[in-house]
Image 1 (tube, rainbow, N blue to C red):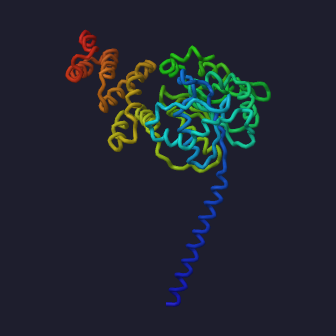
Image 2 (cartoon, rainbow, N blue to C red):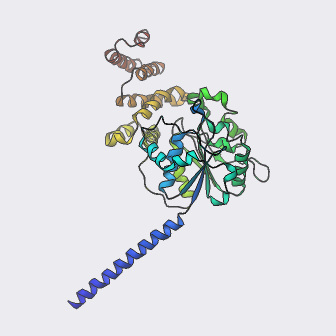
Length: 374
């Protein structure tokens, strides 16, 4: 009996030691996670021109990923002070959470002259059309970014964010982006989704990066792609932003916390996989848990992808468009699908969808136009 008691006491001491070690490890980990990131957003955009500001969804997703990995975050803009805060996406839970955490920071952004770069471990540049306008043009912002580049800091730029980097030079006078594998919002995406803003831009970002010597790498339009070249991390579009934030966590030497992907992010990641492995990949994922995905983004991809694809990719995009149609019903989507099928010489499936169209959308304005094709 005495031996049993001594054994139990020994186990208790071991467990207590383990718990103490675990607590110490958590304390040490928390201390070692004291990393700080400076997020840069555009000051451009007003209540009258909200489309020419920073991208709130990009900012929110990046902020939350960094925050949930115990990274301290400050927000800077060229002018400093209050920036426009859009409310058109307030129905999204993650936007609400971000605003609860960071609204005060958006009302009091730092100006470049307020910032001591030695306080930070990385600079994270958010996109949006406004980033094309003031980030490459503001002298104080460019001076600060030049210092970051020449001190070999981790630099992250997403979507239109790389516009802030195109005029930066290394100490030897060479362009900072020269020879670096990187990406941004592509010309194809620009013309498809930002055509009405291009007149406000001083350049097309993909063109300027290539002109400066960057090695431009990218995924198909709308689909995620993150490029890492040394201390430079770039992301192609909004669906890539959260992944770029996770790449930032790794670049800072921190363990990456598990998370549930944002619904738009998860949707575009799923489509990217389905393009490579077949549309059944999409069906299987939606059958398991459709609530993990955003049907609006699914429809958006299905509607646009074929139209903006290169010719060799059109048949693959058409298969995905047909698969996506199973998950919602809309007359404009069906109209575009019928036209795409006919363009590819697939009359029978086009006719089948047209017959369904007549039954579901009797009297629709497109009906007469479609009838003339058959």
